[in-house]
Length: 52
Image 1 (tube, rainbow, N blue to C red):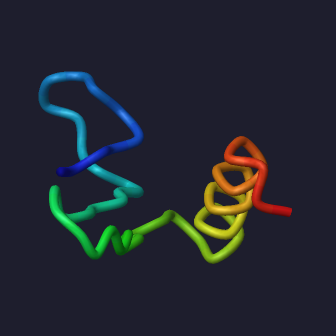
Image 2 (image 1 turned 180 degrees about the vertical axis):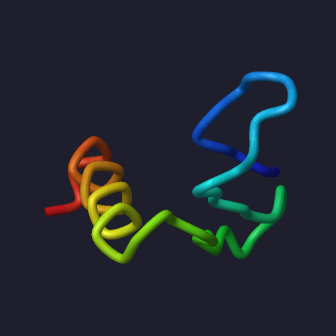
């Protein structure tokens, strides 16, 4: 399964998170414009999942 930061036809993937459909559910974060961009994306994702 692939999730991108944009769902516009022809857009590029600046940040993606890929994971297999079956266990083990490991997420591989790829890309990011800068370190800070990727760090904040992961931080906000974990906060929304209540992983403090």
